[in-house]
Image (cartoon, rainbow, N blue to C red; front, side, top):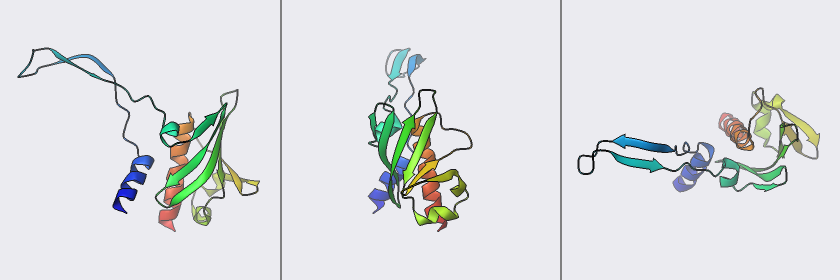
Length: 139
C-alpha cells in the first residue's frame, strides 16, 4: 500500500524536470580544475508519462489520484484553446469549492473550466487531479 501511495504521490506531484546546464565549470579536488557537467533535460511531457494517448488534437486518458481514476479527454482547438473533460466524476466533488467549474454536458461528461486557463494539456491534468484529490480528502 505504501508503494502505491508513493507511486500516486509521484504522479500527482512529479519531480521537477531536469535542467540543462552547459559548460558549467566547477572545482574538482581529485580531477581537472575545470571539469564540466552536462545534465540532459527530461523532454517527455507529463501527459505522455501518465499514459494519455494523443490522436490529432485530442488526448484521452485517466485523471489519477490515490483515491481512484476517472476517464478524461482533452481537446486542443486550432485557436490555441484547450478544453478539458471529465467523465463521471466522484460524488464528493460536489462539496469542493471548485465544483462550479465542472459544467455538465450530459451522459456523465463534464467540461472543466479554470479561472486561469491551463497553458498545456499537462498543466490541466495536474490541476484536475489536485482538485479530485482535495475533494476526496475533504469528504
